[in-house]
Length: 77
Image 1: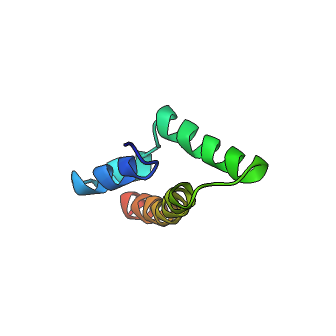
Image 2: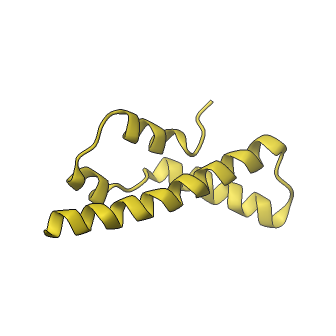
């Protein structure tokens, strides 16, 4: 089972550089999974597992935004 946040976890676990963090973007497949979860959240109801997946992705994505901003700052110094 592929979860939306697996790609972010794998990216961090594989080791990173400032440039790779600053440039990171989720794949189209991950974007589609998240878009489907958000659509389902708005139009129907998510299962508890789907809600947890979306919540975990959103938390990690928020953290990645901070990490990307920090990496860009370090790269510019």
